[in-house]
Length: 92
Image (cartoon, rainbow, N blue to C red):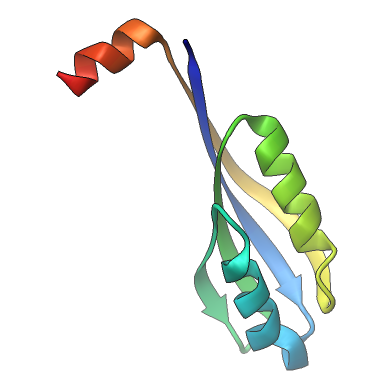
């Protein structure tokens, strides 16, 4: 069995009057966390984790659809594939 762990970070541009509400909504999404908030320029740095790229893409779409979000930019992406033998070695 293989595991395909992925993580990405996003810059989310938000209408300044909706910044705190958008941050709360993002933090309620599974595998999603607001790591930094910059109220002076309406930007959030968001970290998304998941098993597979489909999970990340679906989460990015959910963030993009939140009322008050102006733009979402992917700025980092990492993928780690782990096979069953690697998992057994790390579990021991």
